[in-house]
Length: 331
Image 1 (cartoon, rainbow, N blue to C red):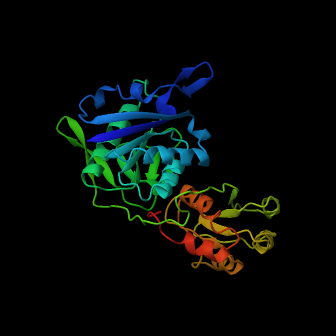
Image 2: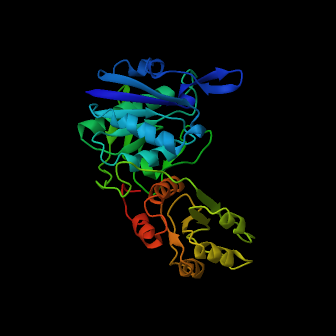
Image 3: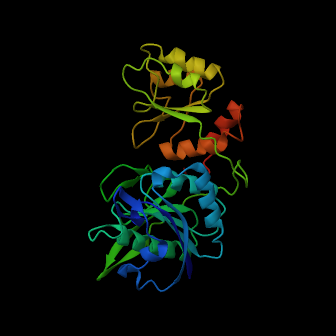
């Protein structure tokens, strides 16, 4: 089989410099780890970026998606990425590569590849072996391989800043696990395969509108007038528990003014798991009465989805609401 490795930088490609860790290693250097010596398949290396992942941007998502599409002759594509925005890129590629015929597996590491106690080699090994299994069973989609787990791309969130097991699959079963077999590990896939819609409303030439405000509600919050005055294309409110608008102070009136000015408001929960349900409590129904939409998605999946939908349905609140509820890739 043929595989393509696309590198973007990140901790996995970093070495120590006088100014701290910085991505300097190429994909060829990263593939020289002993664990990959027995991977008897063709691997083409494409060095796309050399970035700290905090510098990943929507235009670079588009560029990365184009690089992946250029690998159509490969059986699978593995992307190396920094962990800080890995979940954001996983969500973006999940939306952008809906019709790509081969599986895409993203991984990275919490420690540099040259750290003798690091996790880079294990994650690269797992990513390629998961990619091999996905290709053999002809399973498409974007997934994340990290700490011996395979997770669905738009359901991934980074929960830890230092731990090797930094990522979790949010409200979604694992797609695979690494399991011991005698003196080595094998990639084992679960029966779960994401559902992918063939068409997306943003078409073949998508644009991103990143003028989105993400605002967590906190006790004592008085208003969001400054946010509304900045004229974002959309506001994501992160509420408590299952979601709702507090009645104290002027927050309700402030949200009313924002919605009245044509800004879409969408609510998700601050909780990592389970999701929002505005119909459960009076405070949630109050939010619904104001015209606030709700979305049971990770922050990353919701924000990127909005970025793609807003240029297509600008000014059409009902159309935006309808598309926001469409499950394009099990997000």
